[in-house]
Image 1 (cartoon, rainbow, N blue to C red):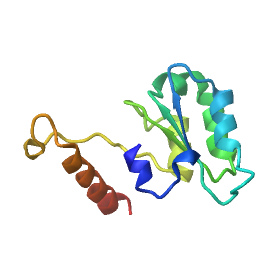
Image 2: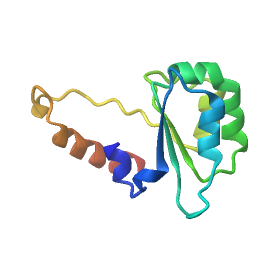
Image 3: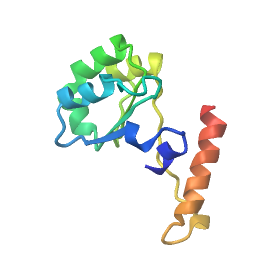
Amino acid sequence: HWLIERTGVHAEWVHYFDGDDSDWVDVNDEVSTVSLFDQDEKKVVVVRNAAKFITANRPQLEKWVEKSKSDSILILETSTWMSTTKLAKAVSEVGLAVRASIPKLKEWGEPPDHLKIEKWLLVHAQKHHH
């Protein structure tokens, strides 16, 4: 994932799951485990298409967000995020919920120029989330 690469996290510490067919046990195991070789390295766990995963594992996610002492980063990529839920409120207290939809701009062309979008995302993130 190009955005994660920009953070300086090594690729071997980024783990991806598909939310349509992932179990909480596997995701939790990955996000909770530290490396035996490099304990200072932050692990990033990304659950793509996470809507179904969130629905199926909401109580476990709420408990993990509230009680986890992990230095790992859990990213849930979902098209919907209800800010009124217990999970969303817990995340806002200890983490960060980022709306990452990209506005459609004529200047990006058709099809969109991905380098222009990447530059826009980085500038926007630094401006609004720094």
